[in-house]
Length: 283
Ligand code: DGL
Image (cartoon, rainbow, N blue to C red):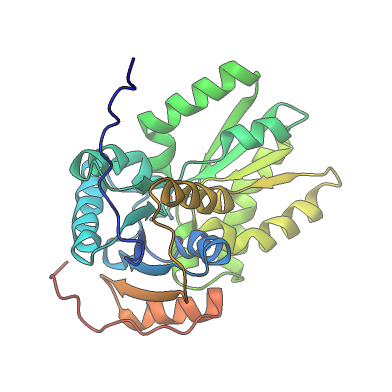
């Protein structure tokens, strides 16, 4: 008997760029893992700073922004999109998948599974935006992992924290206070593992570690999924024979102030990029 015909895969131009987006600069915590793992790729980063933060917005607004940004990136010829935002993934990855069924898409979800595997106390704290924690997608993931592992997830919405990172106020007293308010109750409830469920939070990881050290001598694990996202992107591109060779490149676009995005690339990643002053497509 002859083999069944395989569905034809749309060929992808390996030299096309990968689009990466977030509500603001948080996605740079994912982009740095992508650059480290796939230095030969051309990356186009979109910061939706004019609409940041997403965390307090209703799902339909976040979905509309994600679709507009998706169209912008597709207009730039991207071969794949990384939704480098937990909040946008929860609200809009399904809509993006139906809008672009043949485009490789990678979303970001809070790392509940690796955290559950790490936790000895079986209590895991999850730091994320309120929109992520209220989303059906996140709650379904929590219920599945909880049922499979008997781990209890303690959820902590972190209103205002992404704004502090957006403002570059990583070490300000206000950021310190917010972190204490959000992290300490999780430790007091017995969590031995914390999930950074928002891509802005890896930029205050050192501050979180200091707050933990000042509060308890217990070892506390911290999980974020940037490296796993880069690995998944590599897997998807390899599956489409679409990994690029040669020198990589990063370009940036912002719906807000272009200089702020260029500053963030410099201060958070040590990378110099030029961000065009106006968006061509009136995003
Ligand atoms: N960086 C985003 C996330 O991963 C959202 C931050 C925000 O815009 O509220 O959820």
